[in-house]
Image 1 (cartoon, rainbow, N blue to C red):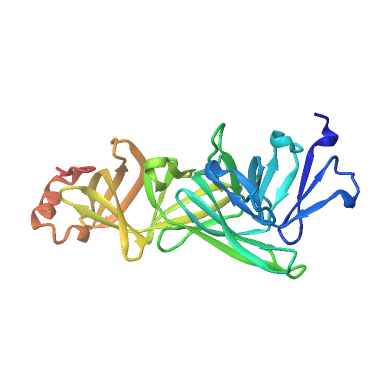
Image 2: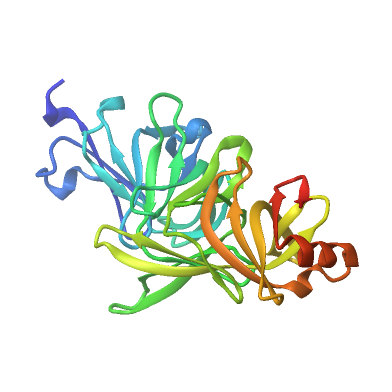
Length: 329
């Protein structure tokens, strides 16, 4: 079919769909403003529910999702359903929530009577980190690879060890900006020298696998540095927690997770007593591989676990901890 007969769509200031047949250069008189609401159906397909249709007719819109600079949900149409390929539809939305497998947007649409309608659009999928350590949501599709919604602004780690994403968007008044934040609840795992994983849902592989520097002990936990974004910027953050030694399990890093909860990471280690006052520990992962992290802890961390450990340290000086198994002298 000739391109001049393709359907072209737009979004008007009231978040309504505008349809017209032909090329973009057609006169405004050929445009048709449609009252309705957007819907995301199964398989993350976008449709526009027409209100004037007694048969609840939907216009199916197919393409690839993305976010614009203001984090509005955007769909770039393909050539299915007689659509004009490359036609970009940007809905004025606000991100109101995120879970391990879902991203939720609020939408307000006006109609020809002057009424406004508020509703929520939900995309299903999973979270990943891109090669620039940016957060991205992978919206699943029935056929083909998922669509990538990239979150280009910076993220931080709060005192509950949650990832907090912050950005600004255009306000209603010209020239104004509104600050928004998005919290992602999960837990950290340290498995390699230069990798740090934030797990949202292990069953569906919804997690951020960050490329980082060697971890450095900090009085508040472990400090990391990573490259962020395409401009080779650096960011530093801390995983907050405290250290414990358990006779049965080994070295434990107890990490707060919010709502008075915590998550433990169990390490192995080679250790020695230095000057009779401190423990020097070289951390190992669950596969007994060196993590490149050297930790110094007060010997008092062993108090309450028996005088036998302290006496053994005095005599042996060196010891090992096997993750999940405990102390070995």
